[in-house]
Length: 171
Image (cartoon, rainbow, N blue to C red; front, top):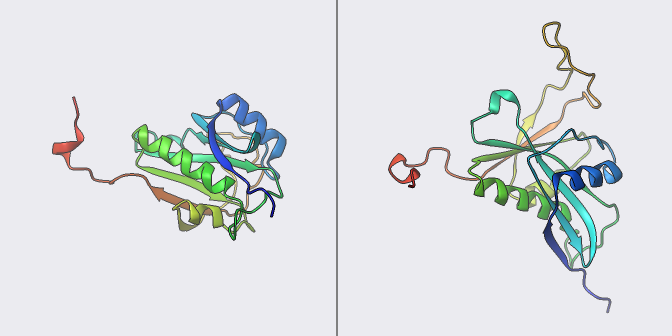
């Protein structure tokens, strides 16, 4: 009987996570920045990293965070009868960190053909499909999107959306 794979969450800098994504993400290797990051190791070897990014301007101050990129090396070994947990662990660790920082919701997106199994396992709910398309406008020029097709939108509630005001303030 072979040795069972042991996965663990470890800290990583945003800079190191961006480099990891650049080297391993199969579809979208470029990330412009991030707020905080997390990694997963199998034994002593890094196998995944993820980055929480600044939400869109319209979401600033709303308690929402976006998990902008998660990348894992292909072909990770399963644990028991379950798929390798690396991506699920990344989503979970980024959500716990976001909750500790006061965020109320975490959002992320999947490309067509991605099942969302890791997201469901991490407690995310499928919220529907985006419109897709470009963000470029005459009044607001933007670079052409790398992937402009429709994407799946996912959300995980991190805390009560309407906390009791009497208990929400702590001095």
